Image (cartoon, rainbow, N blue to C red; front, top):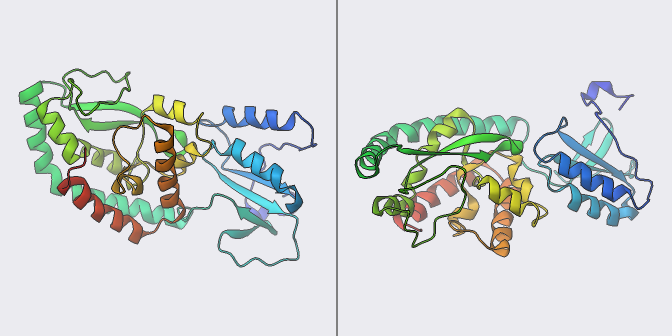
Length: 297
């Protein structure tokens, strides 16, 4: 890195693996301390390929940090052709959790969100006004439910939904069950049709959310599942979405099972790794049919 300052990378810290028993413990502490706040964008691993077991162990430890991870193998004379392998500062690196949503493509998706988000906001504005009046008439104020969630890179933001319950507390994250007495008849209809999510179009126009992406879970749920699913926080490498690949495949609603959440995370990561504008349009189309017409709870 000293010899290639033009590459634009700055080293903010490094660890030396001396193959002792304390190294992985130090990495576990490092991962825990840098889940939500950190001063770096990427993590680089430099190992011979014969030490693949140590790389796999490190990947499990570092998977909780929503940052790109690059692997630099000691193979200077081999030319790689795979699109997930890049040359950085004269060295070949394997990006172990590659996503197309980097660099210019992130700007493309932001433009998609702004344009389509504004169009959808205008289209659904009359619906939102009717829903707001109905909530005000049947339940009183407030009309909106507001709660903090983790967004891109684990940063906090305030999410908006139409209120569907008589009693609600933003500090409580217990999900409503199918027979929850707190949910009003109007609220049940809004949930079944996903109309309660429409205020999140404002989050999209704010730049806090995307039309398509992993759904933002309650913060208590994040704190719970990140300790049970190694790759859970990789979902936060992109902006959370109003709808996602997991949701249109039936993985939505109440999530009280770790195995079910693992499956949902796999669908989220599948989307992140294979993103394209066409994929987004496919998910949006499926949302309009499966989410609204079929009325999944």
